[in-house]
Image (cartoon, rainbow, N blue to C red; front, side, top):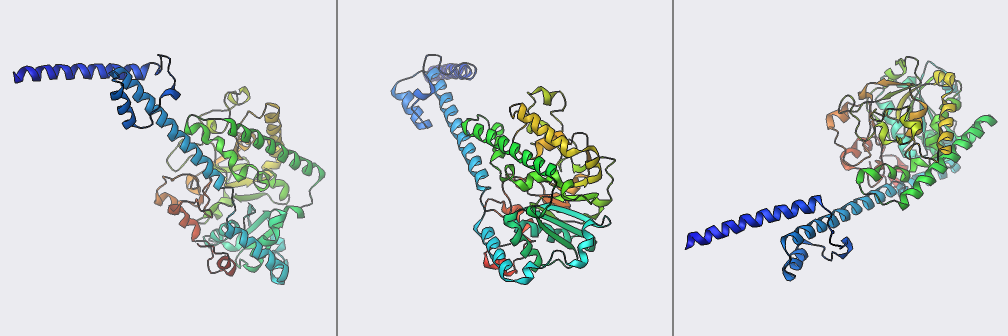
Length: 460
């Protein structure tokens, strides 16, 4: 008797398994609500509610399988929506200026007004000739962030084998000029030359002024176009909207960021420079960069990533450019690695010879005439197009980027070995959203003993 019961139970169990497997397959391969229902009619939000619904209405296995899939889809969409909102808030947080940095600018501006030393000439008269002397190592930094500029300069000097050869050209906007000047006048770099210059102090030709205005106007239109699209879109996949979130980055509207394409006009007497973004830290001597031959190219940059040759996750051409547009698909390879912007060697003579700035402006106008559809928001895409075929690859150890993105997987040894590390991405090291595991690499170059740093509560 016992044997018969077991046999019946085993057969029933086998039948149930087969029926459940069939129902799950149908739920996977078919439409969930073929019977006419819709997702909004599914009232349960948890598995317990699903079980209660099934048992109370005595639903069959097929209904249970379909309702299970509906529940999973609903929960999956909730998770995707939460991730989307988190990413948006995270990028929005990158736009804020911490109270401590705002305090630093105010204190330094006040010092500039009352302290003659803070207004002293930069560089001192005896070093003015260095500014156009091609035998020196010229570094250009375009920024409106005093603290970030101090870290770039101090880390470069500290790790230089020949700091006396370094000449820093810091270009800033009119608003930041007085605090930036005050900082470097009071905290003078004894072994290097530092020039601080505001955009209002440049005497550009009418042609350049018109070009700069046109460039900035188009960039604002691009930003507005993508920003409006971002508000209207409901992105289904995380990777799909991540690229669009770049429009929330301060760099998209930053005048200082876009002016890098006018560096040859900013420094008409120089032939070669190294460009550094204000969110980098220099960890080793970079003097060999000025001796680096670019084989007639305009820019020297890292193409591959720390993970190996042709390894550049998240930064291939297809991640920046719209390959559904024939103007892009007919000229560029979608799987090609995009070069890194942020630490670059610039051959200004070659730049002027082929008029790279004009090429950049032509691409901006073409994008405008194409309905702003050629590339995703950001500073790099138009540069990729304008500089195509004019970028010379340099060794990956010179520049490791991505430290400002979520939980970088770069090993500590690779980070320590890199000549320049770049906090590209929203999580800048001076923000609260910066990642503690890598922020220490930046913090070590903050002068916490400085009286202005202490007054404003900045902690390195």
